Length: 495
Image (cartoon, rainbow, N blue to C red; front, side):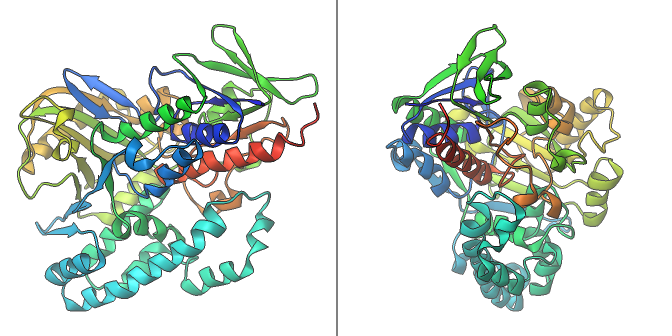
């Protein structure tokens, strides 16, 4: 039995741990926090329970996969239900569109709000999204590449993507299909998950639109989003993995032959291993854990995704219809907002915001008669940003509070916590963004930083800064891809 250490108990690390344990390795997961989750963390304040990371859950089959690797079952480990509506989209003219689950239901919603022409166009749009997904997932997302030449391994799939317009721009592709500008925003804002404006993102990232707007958004029946990392950690531990919480890794150790030999903890203790999977934010991993190695060329001039301000507020009162679990408020200045975020490094002049109220579906996350509210406003990352967060943070908090009041949300604050880009950086996230490297073409697929450190055999990476990229589905796949790398490495390793 080989010993493998996983650094970090976030979703990528937990996925890797499950797959590695299922392969028969002895796995030790080390994390500085007291609970699993990483960026999908947990905050408990005054009887309120907050998820500190992603609030939108899609593609639950990608959670089922690592659970199956250790003999677990999704329905038993994380009972969940699909949200309908997935989102309530609110626009500057006062109108609302609900993102409904199911083709016919969403088609009817578009017919009601945007007219019959756009409703008819929805049929072709769904088929386009589904075809993109079916090609991209097995051939370009859920697989390891050893070099960009790997893209040529399936020329037929590449030709299909080219024919589908996947290498055009997402914003233009959506505008071509729909007349109503509200639908342009509704079906292209997902480019933000890839760290880009819709008019800059490749149309191939329409697969993110497929994941949430077509395949659906889910939520655990109890425990909030943190139920997912909890279930993965419990399944891995039950199968034999060891978890060491509250301990920080300070160095990846090497043998006299230059191979991975384990890790050193902040306490000075050394843990031996035949391989190490590191899920620390990649630029930080090189700086802190592999300081004698130059980062890969793909990190020489990195372009990071925008960051975000997240306000967690425990409030008195419960929302009334039509407020939903997820509520997107689109600002009027669409193009100007992206220019501020991505290019001038300023706050959005007319911000779009996401308001998530998980207690709509799980009241146990707050005291009786109260709600947990998560408000997210995109913000420039620290690499391009010009914002002094020490002085701006209290002003931002007051604006977000007024926003809740103005839009009919319960807003009598009992407890709160505001997270800014500076806080993200202090938590170990490069450029102060939890969304990692943007998915520009030079940072996509095999051009993204790889998950193998060839200079130190036995060191592998997982997480949002390596392949395949950002988001809950992607980092779960990332853990599996790293586990595949370990499986390929260990059988032939010289003893």
